[in-house]
Length: 181
Image (tube, helix red, strand yellow):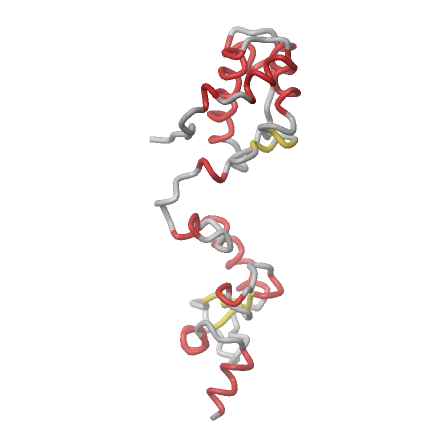
């Protein structure tokens, strides 16, 4: 079952009164629109955004006028919205499912698979450390994530199983010095 998350005290948060006042609507109207936005953003691509949002569709669903929805959305800017991004989205996400959610340096699995595939194609399925060629290559972080490395393509290379496991979380220079010793 898909779901989205509210924090305790959301219905009594004073920011809703300010947003309601700016938009010229009731607090309950603001909460209704916010809940609809959370539901929408949980299904959007990318998640946590209002990509493709239409005030008219929300107005029909909630039985409001499109102008009221637009006024609420505009009043939320800088409080709960930053453009079409829901602020604090990551804080509302579950922390127990998948290691990538605990470590912001890790990419979500679907995204990592796309990045990995692009790197293996770029490197022609050839280990960048020993030159071995195989369709069963791995993707290695030249500077490991644990040492401040990123998932940028410049920091990723194709590596065979043996080289990748041998290198582990070492820098290439450290690993080579160890292998050559």
